[in-house]
Image 1 (spheres, rainbow, N blue to C red):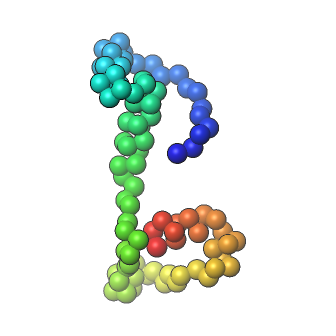
Image 2 (tube, rainbow, N blue to C red):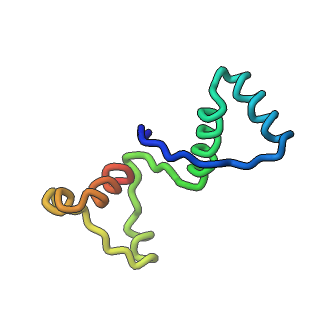
Length: 90
């Protein structure tokens, strides 16, 4: 997780604020840490995490018109975003 933080203002109804504070205390966390954890979990819910050995079959590739080949080490060195995606999703 990044160490840089951006400060923001969050407006909540008093009842919700009290519930969040109470839940944070139950988990021995600060309000900020608790809210950050909730937001992180909720926003990552739709991002699939594929296993390292995940592979798309040739049949599926042909259906989607995918003609993907493993990038060369030079291509990966030149494109950090591509390198990250290949590292993460194979």
